[in-house]
Length: 108
Image (cartoon, rainbow, N blue to C red):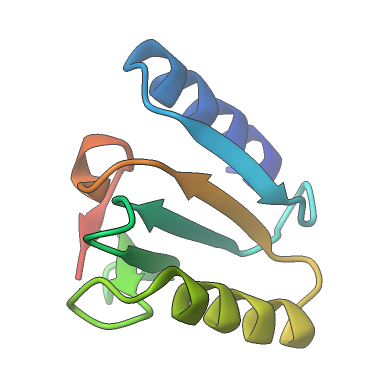
């Protein structure tokens, strides 16, 4: 599925669930990679998820900033480094703790 269409579907899913979501950086409409920044609040921190594929082609989400939430500044620094490498990357911020409630695929 094209990245732009997947992002629109994610926005719709979050809107229906009353979960705040914002596209922070637009990427390539057809094949841009996607980073999700899950913002759990100041006290808990943020997690950044990146798309990956399993051995059988299934969609996975990898915790790019590690298993535990990190400070928002650390998450933003990771995103900035990735955008320097690949300016066609999408960055979407979701104000929610659990990725499983808003994304398809396993989070590993």
